[in-house]
Length: 231
Ligand SMILES: Cc1cc2nc3c(=O)[nH]c(=O)nc-3n(C[C@H](O)[C@H](O)[C@H](O)COP(=O)(O)OP(=O)(O)OC[C@H]3O[C@@H](n4cnc5c(N)ncnc54)[C@H](O)[C@@H]3O)c2cc1C
Image (cartoon, rainbow, N blue to C red; front, side, top):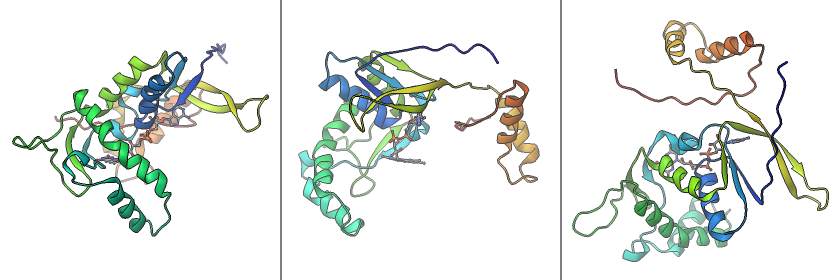
């Protein structure tokens, strides 16, 4: 087995996972912890990781409080009905009263948002959603995280959390492994065409496993993303 190199990094705040929540938390952490050392670790690459990476067509929750479209109480009522009363109303209220200012930040950062030309109001496609051109959503928020963090680690998969011996039930650190990416797009597409009807298993799984075995490695976890391209 190749020699394993271990790298140690000390920090005050460790953000595990740089999806929308993680990159947002990294940005907020800098706001509240100005002098703290903040590190964010992502198993893919924060520019295009997580569920937002594909590009969204809407922001699912915007109150529009400045135009009195909705108020936090309305959102709490909606959530209470939707979830048959099983809600923490205080948390729902708190989220609702802050969500507009977060959306305004995305607007300032350059996220293309659909607006009524006359009134400047965001265009809606439902009571809560507003319409966006979200292809650039994740890179824009990732940029804010990059400017906020002391260090971003891409392609590191956190595998273990380390408990703090001096305090019960507190996490004091984490261990991660470098993830390896195989660039096999042509091969993936070919395999997909050939085996699409003949196998129940997703065909690229086999390709990845075989490539891994060739290198003497075993595939434990796979992170893949499909990007649609025009011919
Ligand atoms: C198909 C789809 C369409 C959607 N459409 C909309 C929409 O139009 N509007 C809307 O507002 N919302 C939409 N959503 C919901 C929204 O995208 C998600 O709620 C949001 O992206 C969740 O963000 P998250 O950061 O909590 O999780 P994720 O986006 O899942 O991010 C988690 C991150 O953590 C990383 N990670 C996980 N484990 C580890 C580990 N062990 N070590 C290191 N990194 C790790 C992952 O790689 C990932 O980047 C949609 C979701 C989906 C799936």
